[in-house]
Amino acid sequence: MALTMQAQRLTAGQTSRTPVRAAHVRRGAVTVRASAATDPMGFKLMRSGIKQASKETILTPRFYTTDFEEMAELVNPANIPQQQQEELEAYLREMKTDYNQRHFVRNEKFKEAAEKLSGPTRKIFVEFLERSCTAEFSGFLLFKELARRLRDVNPTVAEIFQMMSRDEARHAGFINKAMSDFNLALDLGFLTKNRTYTFFKPKYILYTVYLSEKIGYWRYITIYRNLQRNPECQFYPLFEYFEAWCQDECRHGDFLAALLKSKPELLQGPIAKLWTRFFCLTVYITMYLNDHQRSAFYEALGLNTTQFCRHVIIETNNTSKRIFPEVPTVDSPVFWDLMDKMVSVNNQMAAIDNGTSSTPALLQPLAKVALMERLGSLVLRVMLMTPIEAGSYDFENPAELVY
Image 1: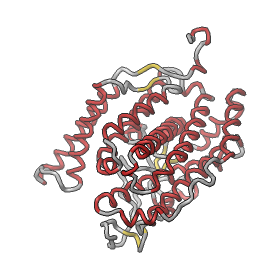
Image 2: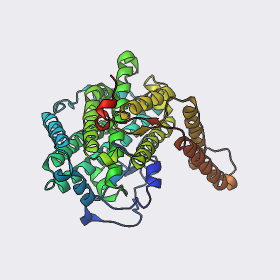
Image 3: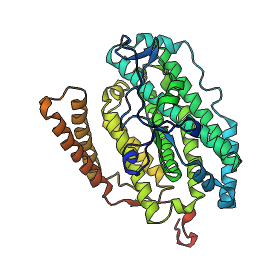
Image 4: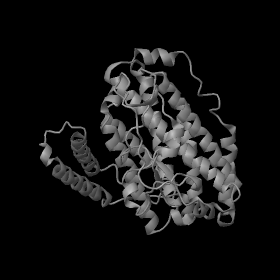
Protein backbone atom coordinates (compact mmCIF):
# COMPACT_ATOMS: atom_id res chain seq x y z
CA MET A 1 0.00 0.00 0.00
CA ALA A 2 1.29 3.39 -0.96
CA LEU A 3 -0.41 6.75 -0.91
CA THR A 4 0.23 10.06 -2.71
CA MET A 5 2.45 12.98 -3.65
CA GLN A 6 0.49 16.21 -4.18
CA ALA A 7 -2.06 15.11 -1.59
CA GLN A 8 0.64 15.39 1.03
CA ARG A 9 1.10 19.05 0.11
CA LEU A 10 -2.42 20.19 -0.59
CA THR A 11 -4.50 18.73 2.26
CA ALA A 12 -3.64 21.71 4.41
CA GLY A 13 -2.18 21.06 7.84
CA GLN A 14 -2.02 17.35 7.26
CA THR A 15 1.70 16.63 7.82
CA SER A 16 3.28 15.85 11.17
CA ARG A 17 5.93 13.71 12.76
CA THR A 18 3.24 11.78 14.60
CA PRO A 19 3.47 7.99 14.84
CA VAL A 20 0.25 6.01 14.85
CA ARG A 21 -0.01 5.45 18.61
CA ALA A 22 -0.50 8.64 20.58
CA ALA A 23 1.77 7.33 23.33
CA HIS A 24 4.72 7.61 20.97
CA VAL A 25 4.19 11.15 19.68
CA ARG A 26 7.35 12.73 18.34
CA ARG A 27 7.64 16.23 16.96
CA GLY A 28 10.34 17.87 14.89
CA ALA A 29 12.72 16.35 12.44
CA VAL A 30 13.95 12.82 12.98
CA THR A 31 17.63 12.40 12.25
CA VAL A 32 18.90 8.93 11.46
CA ARG A 33 22.63 8.62 12.03
CA ALA A 34 23.85 5.82 9.84
CA SER A 35 27.24 4.24 9.83
CA ALA A 36 29.56 5.22 7.01
CA ALA A 37 29.68 1.59 5.89
CA THR A 38 28.30 0.63 2.50
CA ASP A 39 27.57 -2.71 0.87
CA PRO A 40 29.09 -3.80 -2.49
CA MET A 41 26.23 -2.15 -4.41
CA GLY A 42 26.89 1.18 -2.70
CA PHE A 43 23.92 1.18 -0.32
CA LYS A 44 24.54 2.82 3.06
CA LEU A 45 24.22 0.44 5.99
CA MET A 46 22.91 1.08 9.51
CA ARG A 47 24.83 -1.98 10.59
CA SER A 48 26.00 -5.19 8.97
CA GLY A 49 23.29 -6.52 6.64
CA ILE A 50 20.78 -3.78 7.55
CA LYS A 51 20.19 -1.18 4.87
CA GLN A 52 19.72 2.44 5.80
CA ALA A 53 16.25 3.51 4.67
CA SER A 54 16.25 5.71 1.60
CA LYS A 55 15.83 9.42 2.16
CA GLU A 56 12.19 10.46 2.43
CA THR A 57 10.99 12.61 -0.45
CA ILE A 58 7.61 13.65 -1.76
CA LEU A 59 7.65 10.59 -4.08
CA THR A 60 8.73 7.92 -1.59
CA PRO A 61 6.27 5.65 0.28
CA ARG A 62 5.17 7.27 3.53
CA PHE A 63 3.64 6.24 6.84
CA TYR A 64 0.17 7.56 7.69
CA THR A 65 -2.00 8.28 10.68
CA THR A 66 -5.47 9.78 11.04
CA ASP A 67 -8.09 11.11 13.45
CA PHE A 68 -9.21 7.82 14.98
CA GLU A 69 -12.14 9.33 16.85
CA GLU A 70 -13.51 10.78 13.61
CA MET A 71 -12.94 7.44 11.89
CA ALA A 72 -14.85 5.70 14.72
CA GLU A 73 -17.79 8.02 14.15
CA LEU A 74 -17.64 7.36 10.42
CA VAL A 75 -17.86 3.56 10.83
CA ASN A 76 -20.33 3.55 13.72
CA PRO A 77 -23.04 1.00 12.81
CA ALA A 78 -25.69 3.52 13.87
CA ASN A 79 -24.55 5.66 10.92
CA ILE A 80 -24.37 2.84 8.36
CA PRO A 81 -27.45 1.59 6.46
CA GLN A 82 -28.34 -2.04 7.19
CA GLN A 83 -27.70 -3.13 3.59
CA GLN A 84 -24.16 -1.75 3.67
CA GLN A 85 -23.48 -3.27 7.08
CA GLU A 86 -24.51 -6.68 5.70
CA GLU A 87 -22.16 -6.15 2.76
CA LEU A 88 -19.31 -5.40 5.18
CA GLU A 89 -20.10 -8.60 7.08
CA ALA A 90 -19.89 -10.52 3.80
CA TYR A 91 -16.43 -9.06 3.19
CA LEU A 92 -15.37 -10.15 6.66
CA ARG A 93 -16.40 -13.74 5.90
CA GLU A 94 -14.36 -13.62 2.70
CA MET A 95 -11.31 -12.14 4.43
CA LYS A 96 -11.44 -14.86 7.10
CA THR A 97 -11.08 -17.46 4.35
CA ASP A 98 -7.49 -16.24 3.93
CA TYR A 99 -6.97 -17.59 0.42
CA ASN A 100 -3.23 -16.82 0.46
CA GLN A 101 -2.44 -18.34 3.85
CA ARG A 102 -0.04 -20.85 2.30
CA HIS A 103 0.87 -18.90 -0.82
CA PHE A 104 3.97 -17.05 0.37
CA VAL A 105 6.31 -20.01 0.71
CA ARG A 106 9.85 -19.60 -0.57
CA ASN A 107 11.99 -22.17 -2.34
CA GLU A 108 15.61 -22.62 -3.38
CA LYS A 109 15.07 -20.61 -6.59
CA PHE A 110 15.13 -17.30 -4.70
CA LYS A 111 18.74 -17.41 -3.51
CA GLU A 112 19.92 -18.95 -6.77
CA ALA A 113 18.30 -16.16 -8.81
CA ALA A 114 19.74 -13.47 -6.54
CA GLU A 115 23.25 -14.85 -6.99
CA LYS A 116 22.88 -14.68 -10.78
CA LEU A 117 21.60 -11.10 -10.80
CA SER A 118 24.36 -8.52 -11.22
CA GLY A 119 25.18 -5.01 -12.34
CA PRO A 120 22.67 -2.14 -12.48
CA THR A 121 19.70 -4.53 -12.61
CA ARG A 122 20.69 -6.03 -9.25
CA LYS A 123 20.85 -2.60 -7.60
CA ILE A 124 17.65 -1.23 -9.09
CA PHE A 125 15.78 -4.41 -8.13
CA VAL A 126 16.89 -4.01 -4.50
CA GLU A 127 15.57 -0.43 -4.64
CA PHE A 128 12.25 -1.81 -5.92
CA LEU A 129 12.16 -4.30 -3.04
CA GLU A 130 12.81 -1.56 -0.50
CA ARG A 131 10.07 0.71 -1.84
CA SER A 132 7.62 -2.19 -1.99
CA CYS A 133 8.45 -3.40 1.51
CA THR A 134 8.10 0.11 2.94
CA ALA A 135 4.72 0.59 1.25
CA GLU A 136 3.37 -2.75 2.46
CA PHE A 137 4.65 -2.17 5.99
CA SER A 138 3.05 1.28 6.01
CA GLY A 139 -0.28 -0.37 5.26
CA PHE A 140 0.26 -2.93 8.02
CA LEU A 141 0.83 -0.23 10.64
CA LEU A 142 -2.18 1.85 9.62
CA PHE A 143 -4.58 -1.10 9.35
CA LYS A 144 -3.41 -2.61 12.62
CA GLU A 145 -4.01 0.64 14.49
CA LEU A 146 -7.41 1.10 12.85
CA ALA A 147 -8.34 -2.40 13.97
CA ARG A 148 -7.30 -1.63 17.53
CA ARG A 149 -9.07 1.73 17.71
CA LEU A 150 -12.34 0.60 16.09
CA ARG A 151 -12.79 -2.71 17.92
CA ASP A 152 -15.35 -1.39 20.41
CA VAL A 153 -17.23 0.73 17.84
CA ASN A 154 -17.71 -1.59 14.87
CA PRO A 155 -16.23 -5.06 15.47
CA THR A 156 -16.92 -6.09 11.86
CA VAL A 157 -14.93 -3.24 10.33
CA ALA A 158 -12.21 -3.59 12.96
CA GLU A 159 -11.75 -7.28 12.22
CA ILE A 160 -11.55 -6.61 8.47
CA PHE A 161 -8.79 -4.07 9.11
CA GLN A 162 -7.08 -6.71 11.25
CA MET A 163 -7.25 -9.17 8.33
CA MET A 164 -5.87 -6.48 6.01
CA SER A 165 -2.98 -5.83 8.39
CA ARG A 166 -2.32 -9.58 8.38
CA ASP A 167 -2.03 -9.51 4.57
CA GLU A 168 0.20 -6.43 4.50
CA ALA A 169 2.50 -7.87 7.18
CA ARG A 170 2.77 -11.06 5.17
CA HIS A 171 3.67 -9.10 2.03
CA ALA A 172 6.21 -6.90 3.82
CA GLY A 173 7.86 -9.88 5.50
CA PHE A 174 8.05 -11.80 2.23
CA ILE A 175 9.69 -8.85 0.48
CA ASN A 176 12.10 -8.18 3.33
CA LYS A 177 13.12 -11.83 3.22
CA ALA A 178 13.75 -11.42 -0.50
CA MET A 179 16.09 -8.54 0.32
CA SER A 180 18.08 -10.93 2.49
CA ASP A 181 18.89 -12.89 -0.67
CA PHE A 182 20.96 -9.83 -1.57
CA ASN A 183 22.51 -9.75 1.94
CA LEU A 184 20.37 -6.78 2.96
CA ALA A 185 17.22 -6.14 4.98
CA LEU A 186 15.22 -3.26 6.44
CA ASP A 187 14.93 -2.77 10.20
CA LEU A 188 11.14 -2.46 10.26
CA GLY A 189 11.05 -1.85 14.01
CA PHE A 190 13.40 1.09 13.58
CA LEU A 191 11.24 2.48 10.77
CA THR A 192 8.14 2.23 12.98
CA LYS A 193 9.69 4.46 15.63
CA ASN A 194 11.65 6.88 13.46
CA ARG A 195 9.75 7.36 10.22
CA THR A 196 7.82 10.55 9.54
CA TYR A 197 4.06 10.02 9.87
CA THR A 198 1.74 12.07 7.67
CA PHE A 199 -1.72 12.92 9.00
CA PHE A 200 -4.74 12.47 6.71
CA LYS A 201 -8.37 13.01 7.63
CA PRO A 202 -10.38 9.73 7.60
CA LYS A 203 -12.16 10.43 4.33
CA TYR A 204 -8.82 11.14 2.63
CA ILE A 205 -7.49 7.86 4.00
CA LEU A 206 -10.44 6.00 2.47
CA TYR A 207 -10.04 7.65 -0.94
CA THR A 208 -6.29 7.21 -1.17
CA VAL A 209 -6.04 3.70 0.28
CA TYR A 210 -8.79 2.52 -2.08
CA LEU A 211 -6.81 3.92 -5.00
CA SER A 212 -3.51 2.54 -3.71
CA GLU A 213 -4.94 -0.96 -3.40
CA LYS A 214 -6.53 -0.88 -6.84
CA ILE A 215 -3.52 0.57 -8.61
CA GLY A 216 -1.39 -2.01 -6.77
CA TYR A 217 -3.61 -4.74 -8.17
CA TRP A 218 -3.20 -3.48 -11.74
CA ARG A 219 0.56 -3.07 -11.36
CA TYR A 220 1.07 -6.60 -10.05
CA ILE A 221 -1.24 -8.34 -12.50
CA THR A 222 0.21 -6.42 -15.46
CA ILE A 223 3.76 -7.41 -14.52
CA TYR A 224 2.67 -11.02 -13.94
CA ARG A 225 0.89 -11.32 -17.29
CA ASN A 226 3.82 -9.78 -19.14
CA LEU A 227 6.24 -12.26 -17.60
CA GLN A 228 3.94 -15.16 -18.44
CA ARG A 229 4.22 -14.06 -22.06
CA ASN A 230 7.96 -13.36 -21.77
CA PRO A 231 9.39 -15.89 -19.28
CA GLU A 232 12.95 -15.06 -20.34
CA CYS A 233 12.53 -11.69 -18.54
CA GLN A 234 11.58 -13.25 -15.20
CA PHE A 235 14.90 -12.81 -13.44
CA TYR A 236 13.62 -13.47 -9.90
CA PRO A 237 10.87 -15.84 -8.64
CA LEU A 238 9.08 -13.16 -6.57
CA PHE A 239 7.10 -12.19 -9.67
CA GLU A 240 5.63 -15.70 -9.90
CA TYR A 241 3.64 -14.92 -6.75
CA PHE A 242 2.01 -11.77 -8.15
CA GLU A 243 -1.15 -13.39 -9.55
CA ALA A 244 -2.49 -14.52 -6.18
CA TRP A 245 -0.77 -11.67 -4.35
CA CYS A 246 -2.67 -9.03 -6.31
CA GLN A 247 -5.98 -10.59 -5.26
CA ASP A 248 -5.22 -9.42 -1.71
CA GLU A 249 -4.93 -5.88 -3.06
CA CYS A 250 -8.19 -6.27 -4.97
CA ARG A 251 -10.09 -7.56 -1.93
CA HIS A 252 -8.78 -4.68 0.20
CA GLY A 253 -9.95 -2.19 -2.42
CA ASP A 254 -13.38 -3.81 -2.67
CA PHE A 255 -13.85 -3.56 1.10
CA LEU A 256 -12.89 0.12 1.07
CA ALA A 257 -15.34 0.70 -1.79
CA ALA A 258 -18.07 -0.86 0.37
CA LEU A 259 -17.05 1.36 3.27
CA LEU A 260 -17.21 4.42 1.03
CA LYS A 261 -20.66 3.41 -0.22
CA SER A 262 -21.85 3.22 3.37
CA LYS A 263 -21.25 6.98 3.57
CA PRO A 264 -23.06 8.47 0.53
CA GLU A 265 -21.82 11.98 1.35
CA LEU A 266 -18.29 10.83 0.44
CA LEU A 267 -19.44 9.89 -3.07
CA GLN A 268 -22.09 12.46 -3.89
CA GLY A 269 -22.11 16.20 -4.48
CA PRO A 270 -19.58 18.73 -5.80
CA ILE A 271 -17.14 18.41 -2.88
CA ALA A 272 -16.95 14.62 -3.25
CA LYS A 273 -16.40 15.02 -6.99
CA LEU A 274 -13.54 17.43 -6.39
CA TRP A 275 -11.79 15.19 -3.85
CA THR A 276 -12.14 11.94 -5.79
CA ARG A 277 -10.75 13.53 -8.95
CA PHE A 278 -7.97 15.19 -6.96
CA PHE A 279 -6.85 11.97 -5.29
CA CYS A 280 -7.03 10.01 -8.54
CA LEU A 281 -4.68 12.50 -10.14
CA THR A 282 -2.25 12.61 -7.24
CA VAL A 283 -1.93 8.82 -7.26
CA TYR A 284 -1.55 8.70 -11.05
CA ILE A 285 1.00 11.51 -11.17
CA THR A 286 3.04 10.02 -8.33
CA MET A 287 3.22 6.65 -10.06
CA TYR A 288 4.01 8.13 -13.48
CA LEU A 289 6.91 10.23 -12.19
CA ASN A 290 8.26 7.52 -9.90
CA ASP A 291 8.27 4.80 -12.53
CA HIS A 292 9.86 6.99 -15.19
CA GLN A 293 12.74 7.64 -12.81
CA ARG A 294 13.30 3.87 -12.78
CA SER A 295 12.73 2.89 -16.40
CA ALA A 296 15.68 0.48 -16.30
CA PHE A 297 13.77 -1.76 -13.89
CA TYR A 298 10.72 -2.07 -16.14
CA GLU A 299 12.89 -2.53 -19.22
CA ALA A 300 14.62 -5.43 -17.43
CA LEU A 301 11.16 -7.00 -17.11
CA GLY A 302 10.57 -6.59 -20.84
CA LEU A 303 8.16 -3.69 -20.33
CA ASN A 304 8.01 -0.28 -21.95
CA THR A 305 7.73 2.06 -18.96
CA THR A 306 5.40 4.55 -20.61
CA GLN A 307 3.09 1.88 -22.00
CA PHE A 308 3.07 0.06 -18.65
CA CYS A 309 2.18 3.20 -16.70
CA ARG A 310 -0.52 4.24 -19.13
CA HIS A 311 -2.13 0.81 -19.08
CA VAL A 312 -2.14 0.67 -15.27
CA ILE A 313 -3.55 4.18 -14.93
CA ILE A 314 -6.26 3.62 -17.53
CA GLU A 315 -7.37 0.36 -15.92
CA THR A 316 -7.30 1.88 -12.42
CA ASN A 317 -9.36 4.79 -13.71
CA ASN A 318 -11.89 2.40 -15.27
CA THR A 319 -12.13 0.54 -11.96
CA SER A 320 -12.56 3.78 -10.02
CA LYS A 321 -15.45 4.81 -12.28
CA ARG A 322 -17.56 2.15 -10.55
CA ILE A 323 -17.39 4.00 -7.24
CA PHE A 324 -16.12 7.59 -7.63
CA PRO A 325 -18.53 10.27 -8.92
CA GLU A 326 -15.82 11.86 -11.08
CA VAL A 327 -12.53 10.62 -12.49
CA PRO A 328 -9.88 12.23 -14.69
CA THR A 329 -10.07 12.07 -18.47
CA VAL A 330 -7.10 9.76 -18.96
CA ASP A 331 -8.02 8.74 -22.51
CA SER A 332 -7.17 12.20 -23.85
CA PRO A 333 -3.91 12.81 -25.79
CA VAL A 334 -3.70 16.15 -23.99
CA PHE A 335 -3.61 14.37 -20.63
CA TRP A 336 -0.66 12.19 -21.63
CA ASP A 337 1.18 15.08 -23.25
CA LEU A 338 1.01 16.98 -19.95
CA MET A 339 2.07 13.88 -18.01
CA ASP A 340 5.11 13.40 -20.27
CA LYS A 341 6.07 17.03 -19.79
CA MET A 342 5.91 16.46 -16.03
CA VAL A 343 8.31 13.54 -16.42
CA SER A 344 10.75 15.74 -18.32
CA VAL A 345 10.63 18.47 -15.67
CA ASN A 346 10.91 15.96 -12.81
CA ASN A 347 13.92 14.31 -14.44
CA GLN A 348 15.62 17.70 -14.73
CA MET A 349 15.04 18.32 -11.02
CA ALA A 350 16.38 14.87 -10.20
CA ALA A 351 19.51 15.62 -12.23
CA ILE A 352 20.11 18.72 -10.10
CA ASP A 353 19.60 16.71 -6.91
CA ASN A 354 21.95 13.88 -7.89
CA GLY A 355 24.67 16.09 -9.36
CA THR A 356 24.30 15.11 -13.01
CA SER A 357 22.76 18.36 -14.25
CA SER A 358 24.64 20.41 -16.86
CA THR A 359 23.35 23.62 -15.26
CA PRO A 360 26.19 25.56 -13.56
CA ALA A 361 26.21 24.97 -9.81
CA LEU A 362 25.59 28.62 -8.97
CA LEU A 363 22.45 28.66 -11.09
CA GLN A 364 21.02 25.34 -9.92
CA PRO A 365 18.95 26.72 -6.98
CA LEU A 366 17.22 29.21 -9.29
CA ALA A 367 16.83 26.56 -12.00
CA LYS A 368 15.17 24.21 -9.53
CA VAL A 369 12.71 26.87 -8.40
CA ALA A 370 11.78 27.52 -12.02
CA LEU A 371 11.35 23.79 -12.63
CA MET A 372 9.14 23.42 -9.55
CA GLU A 373 6.95 26.26 -10.79
CA ARG A 374 6.79 24.61 -14.20
CA LEU A 375 5.80 21.27 -12.65
CA GLY A 376 3.15 22.98 -10.55
CA SER A 377 1.65 24.67 -13.60
CA LEU A 378 1.49 21.33 -15.46
CA VAL A 379 -0.22 19.67 -12.48
CA LEU A 380 -2.72 22.52 -12.35
CA ARG A 381 -3.49 22.16 -16.06
CA VAL A 382 -4.20 18.45 -15.58
CA MET A 383 -6.37 19.21 -12.54
CA LEU A 384 -8.43 21.69 -14.57
CA MET A 385 -9.16 19.29 -17.43
CA THR A 386 -12.83 18.37 -17.87
CA PRO A 387 -13.45 15.18 -15.83
CA ILE A 388 -15.56 12.12 -16.60
CA GLU A 389 -18.86 11.82 -14.75
CA ALA A 390 -19.08 8.36 -13.18
CA GLY A 391 -20.20 6.72 -9.94
CA SER A 392 -21.90 3.70 -8.45
CA TYR A 393 -25.36 2.66 -9.64
CA ASP A 394 -26.20 2.21 -5.96
CA PHE A 395 -26.74 5.97 -5.81
CA GLU A 396 -28.72 6.29 -9.04
CA ASN A 397 -32.48 6.46 -9.47
CA PRO A 398 -33.35 2.97 -10.76
CA ALA A 399 -35.94 4.48 -13.07
CA GLU A 400 -33.20 6.38 -14.88
CA LEU A 401 -31.01 3.35 -15.58
CA VAL A 402 -31.03 1.93 -19.08
CA TYR A 403 -29.73 -1.60 -19.59
